[in-house]
Image 1 (cartoon, one colour):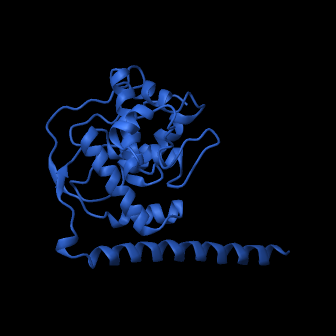
Image 2: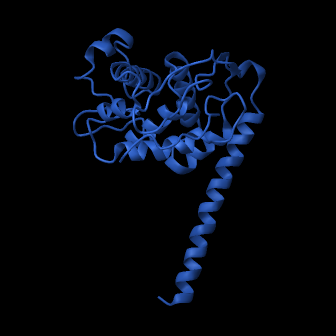
Image 3: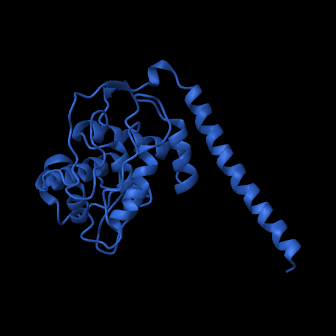
Amino acid sequence: MTAHSSFSRLRRLASGATLRIALALASAVLASSCATIGDELPARNAPDAGIALAVPAAGATLAGSAPAATHALSPEPALSAMLVARFRIRQASAQRIIHAVYQASSDSHIPASLILAIIATESGFNARARSTAGASGLMQILPRCHADLIARLKPHQDLFDPEPNIDIGTHILKRYLDDAGGDVTLALHRYSGGTRGYQGRIDGYWRTFAAWPGPIASPLRAPVPTPPFSA
């Protein structure tokens, strides 16, 4: 293959990728503009308001302060489009995951951006993901390790469904944060079972989601965290 033909092929591939991303963005915005008032979700508390997303590595903690402001959840079309393009999931699945994350974030006061970062790292937003150890779904829940929590919160529900999986996964993370006195690094180390490099990957995704542009009152609108982790 000549250098000229290789270059032409690369240009065609790049053009195709750009077109797919543009179509995903256009589709998401169109779906949002066609939504009716009756389809809007009820207002919830903004969990990221007044929460320290990250502090220096020594004694990194996650703590609440001022009362959270209220906001109305929207499908966040730009965020949905990014998930569709980057993680190759359907738009309806992306919006369903975002809504479940915002609900879990509101209930737990854990930043939505951190929950999304864990999902990206654990499963790549594949709701059907299953590890060889039996970890299931978006947040890779291990049923044998959390049988009590599952039985209390979501008995007889499918852990491959986004809503119960994200709810249980966030409860597990909240338990670890409480046990660690709010230390994010220790909580994530425990969540991952001490996986090497895990915290560094979380930090990269966390920065992306925390800085994602969107409505002023979105749970994702928060200062970009400084690195609280050591990979």
